[in-house]
Image 1 (cartoon, helix red, strand yellow):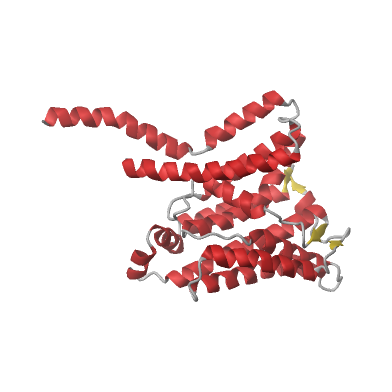
Image 2: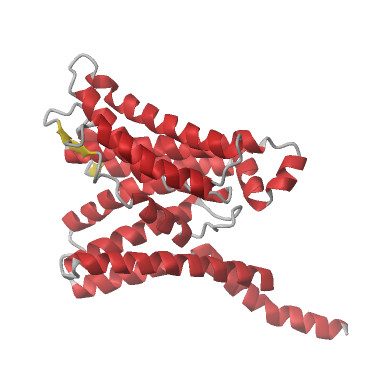
Length: 329
C-alpha cells in the first residue's frame, strides 16, 4: 500500500509541476506567439518605431487595467472608467487653457477621477448596490457630464503644459511607458506587500469570512473603486497629453472593455481573490500587440472589433476553465 501511494505521488508530481508552470507562465506564451506571428506577416512589426507605438498604445490601457485589477480582485467590476477618463481629460484641457491655473491641469484630472471613483465605491459599499448596475449607470451619466464640460465639442490646446508626458521620452523610453510601469510597480507593492492588499484578496475570496475576521469590507471596497477612478483620471491626463485635445463623446469609448480583457487574460479571476498585476501587464501587451498587428496586416476596422469581442468571450471562458481545473486539482 505504501509503495502504491509512493508510486502515485511520483506519477502525479510531473503533472503538478506542469500545472504550476502553466500557472506561472500564464498568457506569456500567447504574447510570444502573437509577436512571432505578426513579425512573419509584416516586416514592419519589429521595427523600433512600431514597437514604441505598441508600448505607447498599451500604456493607457495598462493604467486603466491596473485599477480594474483592484476592483475585479474583490469580485467587482467598473464599467465607468472610459467615461471617467473622458471627463478627467476634459477637466485637464479646460484648466490648461487658463494660464493662471494651467499647472493644476493634471491634479484636476486626478481629482475628477478620484471623485467619481469614490461615488461609485460609496454607492456599492454603503447602499449595497450591485457593482455592475452602479458602474453601468455611471458609464452613461459621467459620459454626459464629460460632454457638458466641453459643451459637446472637442477642446484643443496646442500649448498644453503637460504635453511632454504624452509625446516626450526619457533616455528613449516614452513617458507614457514610464508612468504605466510605475503604476504597475506601485500596484504590485500595495497588493502584495501591504495588509490592505491581503484584505483585498480576502474580500474577493470570501467577503463574509473577511467581515467575520474583522476586515472592514465597506472601506476596502470604497478604496478599490477610488483607485480605479484615480487611475482612470491619470489615464485621462495621459490621453489628453498624447492628443493635445479631449472630446467628451468619443474619448475613452470602450476603453473599459480593453481593460477588462487585459485583466482577465492576465489571470485575474472574475470571482475575485485570484490574480496578479504582472499578469495584467501581459494581458495589456497582448491587446496592444493584437490591435497593432491587425492594423499592420490590413484587417478592416470592423473586424478588429469582432476579434476583440471574441477575445473578451474567450478570456471569460479561459477564466472558467482555470477555476474548474483548480477545483479538480
